[in-house]
Image (cartoon, rainbow, N blue to C red; front, top):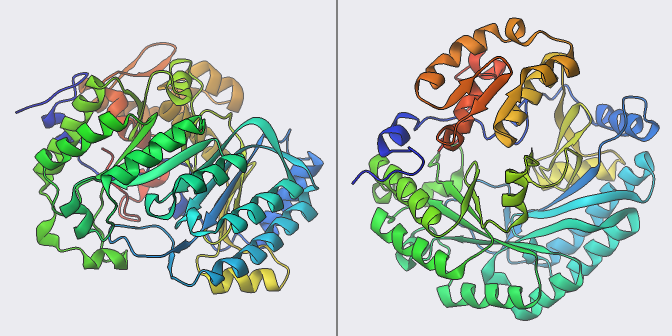
Length: 464
């Protein structure tokens, strides 16, 4: 059966079953270089404080908590598997040192409008440790009223009482890692969590007034089939979260050691994965969810769906956001940040991270200072990814380029997507169609100079 929504057919999904960046940044993180050092990062912070470079952007915080009690076989995140909870106490002390370094270079009380705790498993921390962390951040930064304060939650690590703690600490958005409700699939990926427990947690979260509840799902996992995933989608529709993130599983055991525990023979075929995605688009659309873009769905009344309707979407390392374009401080192991025209990334191992802080240095080990060309292309790619259109005049005025001359090769390459009905162009700009919005990564890739000149350098997830 060939399911279709907004003209998106199985044939189109198969045709665009290609790899590409997610564009949570541009240039993408695989372009970061080790020549960028902690000193470069400190200089960027100093310039932000002095206002030498430009008027500073609003500020966002990301805190990476790397610890997990058990290993999920599909996971490609930076994590440390341990049942020794005493390790988190030491980690918090090092986070405090990293925060102190930022205060030293930026001043105390910088206003924060967005905070996200990711992992790993942030709820690996005890209630007391979560209070300690939030108190530390509150002493050093000013958490603005009405901001977005979110945390990723492993349902196996929380109960209603823990939700009380999260609400008391000021978190107003939760993201539950569900992946799949099917017990056989859960067993195959070593992540067993009863459906009724997830339903009880979401109900308890609603009762406590959390503004938005997200559920993460993954298709393409071992033992999944289109029919089994239909059942998961039906349960998710009953659960009715405000947002849904629907990711494709990328099996890369050569890069991610935990995935070697997955039996390749149990993975669904490419055709089955396409069918799961196609049926998911139909099912979620029929359930009233708006396709925000890039694997994200939201109910019409959710802030993310409203921001899309109003053309206010933005994108950062946490994905789509309702917050304005902002600088981002990444705290913790492997965290990525952005200050003005620079990107930075912390050390990926706990040992290297702690060693840098023991020496009184930022744990930054690589990054990138964006060139003028990077900035122009970033503006085009983010406009496509977030608003679905690019106005030639706005780019020309902001960056003093003549769009058709500067992007002559790109506009020629765009013709293939025009022929496919993905985009339209006129004298004023480029517009992504309703059909093309499902393949917006392919549109953005046309303007990625790095990708066009070095197609084999990095492996990315599939664009659909």
